[in-house]
Length: 394
Image (cartoon, rainbow, N blue to C red; front, side, top):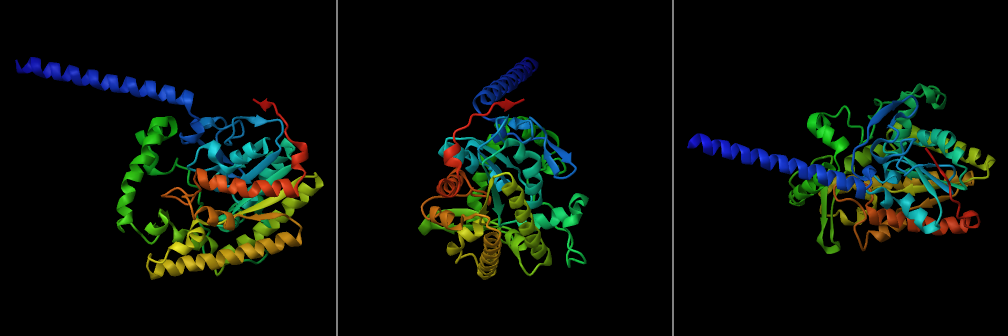
C-alpha cells in the first residue's frame, strides 16, 4: 500500500513539474513575440580591439552592429552617442531618451550607445559608425558621473589611444577598473544556471528586478547601507531611492590627477569631433548629463554628516567640471545643453531614476528628450530636413 502511495505521489510530482516547465516554455515563447528581447535578456559580449568589448551582433535583440536599435538604417536624421545613460540601461529601448526624441521630431534617431563607452570611444564611433549614416545632427550624451575617469582609463590602457597621452604624465594612482555593468562573463554571480537564464530567458529577467525591489524596503530602515551605497528617504517629497556617493565622488574628484587628465582628454576629444562634424556639415551637440546625487542633493540632510559632506563635494566638483566643459565648448563654438536644471525640476514632481540605480527611468529619459527637443528646433536645420525614411541594412 505504501509503495503504491509513493508511486502515485512521485507520478503526480513528475506531472506537476512537467506541466510547470511546459507552462514556462509557452510563456517564454509568447513573451518573445510580444516584447523586445533587448529590453530583458542580457546580451552576449565579445572582444573589440579598440572599444575593449561590445555586444555580439544580433544578440538579445540588438542590431547588426551590436547596438540597441531594430536594425542598422541607410541613414538617420540624428545619431546619439553615449554610455549607459544614453543606451537606456534598465529601461526599455523605447523608453530611452533617443527613442523619445525620435517620436518628438517624427524622424529617425540611431542610438549608438553602450554601457561603459568612454569619450574616446565616442570619437571612434563618430567616424566608424555615425558618419556612414549621414546624420544632420550628432548628440553626445556626456555623463558627468564617470566619463572623465573612463576617458582616462581608455587612453592609458589601450595602445590605440597612446597618442592622446600626456608626455611625462605620471599618475599617483593605479588605472581604475572599468565601470561597465553588463560585462557578466567573468562575474561568478552570472555563471552556471543563473548565467544561462540571464542570457536566454525573458521571464528570469522580468522576475529578478521585482525580487530585488522586495528587499529594498529593508534599506529604508538603514539595513544594507554601506560606504558605497546609501538609501535616501524623504517622505515629504515622496523620494525613496538608492545613492552611490562614494562611486560618484571617486569619478569626479578633481583632486585626483586621473580625473584631471580625463577632463583634458575629454575636452580634446570633443574638439576633434566638432572639427570632423563641421567638415561634413553636421551639427555636433553635447548634452551634459548630471549625477543622480547632484539632482537629489537638496534632500540628503538626514543621511549622516559623512555622506552629506561627500555629496556636497560631488556637487562642487560637478559644477566646476560643468563650467570648465561649457567654457571650452563655447571657445570652440560647440553647442551644449545642460540637463541638470531640467532633471532637477522634473524630480520635484516625480521619480525620474530607477530606485536602486543611478540611471534614469522612463520619466527621466522623457525629461531629457523634452529638454533637448526645443534646442534642436532652435539651433539646427533639422526641422527643414525631416522626415527621412531609411531602408534597413541586414
